[in-house]
Amino acid sequence: QVQLVESGGGLVQAGGSLRLSCAASGRTFSSYTMGWFRQAPGKEREFVAAISGSGGLTAYADSVKGRFTISRDNAENTMYLQMNSLKPEDTAIYSCAADPGYWTVRRGNNIEYWGQGTQVTVSS
Image 1 (cartoon, one colour):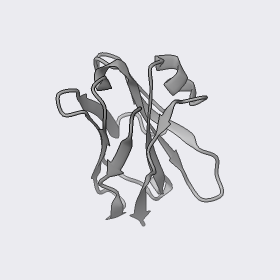
Image 2 (image 1 turned 135 degrees about the horizontal axis):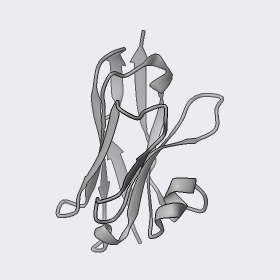
Image 3 (image 1 turned 90 degrees about the vertical axis):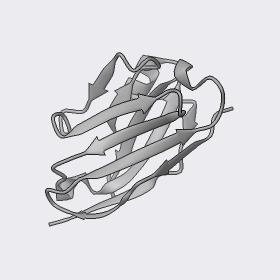
Image 4 (image 1 turned 90 degrees about the horizontal axis):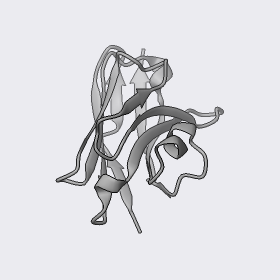
């Protein structure tokens, strides 16, 4: 069993930065691919970024590439999302996810564990 708890969301002006954290319970954190997803009001949930268990493989949605950076600290059982140059269209609830399968996280289907989400609001 893995429990995920996000933190770091908030209100920021366009062009600003935020750093989200996802703290995971359990002893096998490094065996899970981790990912960030977001859902804006009235829209479907969308993939943001993913990172493999070792941290050696990362992937990003085109909409955030070059602005967001995903990372993880396996010693601290924590994943991060550094978000720079934020835009109003980045406003959403951001949730972290964990699954043993890299492509399961990349596709966003049948992911085993989800956090409760944290609100990010970017004002124009």
